[in-house]
Amino acid sequence: MKGHLSYEAQLARMVGRGLSTASRPEAIAALKRIGYYRLSAYTYPFRKPPTDSDRNAGRTRADEFRDGADFDDALRLHEFDRKLRAVLLPALQEIEVGFATKVGYLLRKRAGDGHLRVDCLDSAACSRVNVDGESAHEAWVRRYEKLRQDAKDEEYVKHHILHYGGEIPIWAATGFMDFGCLIRLYSLMDKRDRKKIADELGLGGNGSDTLLRWLRALNILRNHCAHSNRIWNRSTVDVPPKYSIQVAPADLHHLNELDNDQRQKIYLLIALTAYLERALNPSSTWAWSALRTQAKKLGNVGGMTLENTMGFPEDWHELALWNKA
Image (cartoon, rainbow, N blue to C red; front, side, top):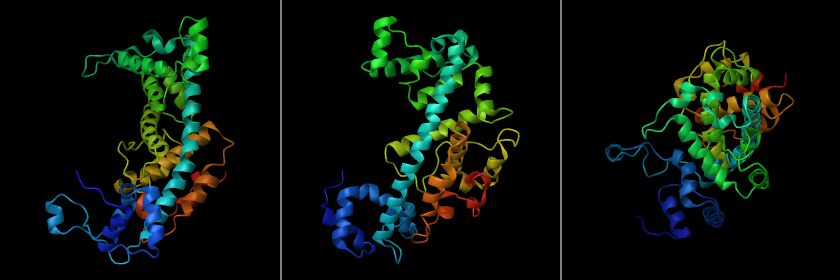
């Protein structure tokens, strides 16, 4: 384990490696507020390219900073990232709630406990066996029961336990399911119900499969935002694949034109967030007000721009997705 470093020693290490700072007290205050490790994610891009010895040691950057690297630029990136998460999270939460409502509504039409009954779901999807020998539905129910237990002190849960023998109907159960649990339930739903949800969100063709991939990626983004993890210039773990133009509307066709490097970046998921949020709330102005306004604030920070660190296309602000219809 690395030894303890005081805040002064942490700053001294950065400065010794070539990171300049205009105000030592302000830099120390930032390290106390943000932390050396978290802040290093924003100083890392300012390091020099790796030497041969760095590469041999498995490092992708040198320890030393390039000429002109500034502590204040790292703070600007951190602040931009913090505000971007604050803008994204409400939209992702609106998608989560709207999606939960649609799942609950369709399963309720089949049965109040449709989420627990394989005959109300897709039997083939439910019966797939995982490496532990559990069926997909058994594994889902195990997760569901854990969430239900965690919510046992919620008033609506106690109400159903007291008056209905502990069974929580689907329209109430969606209240304690997390986004991942909802997405997994969607993957187990009857194909006709999944298609209906996809259709309602404006997706054609095999839109239900496409929507599933989108939601899985957005759940990861939502968790990063909720837990204050860096999203600026983060690479996407589960990149949604390209789709036929029959699946998604014209506002999203430009996503298929992104190169492989751009597709790994956060713009793709931000664009999907904008589309789904508006599909669920047609009166929303989020895309062209809150998101567009915050995104444009990055500007150029030490050579870092929306286009070269976040995968935004050069003309993104002119696209229909980001403009009022």
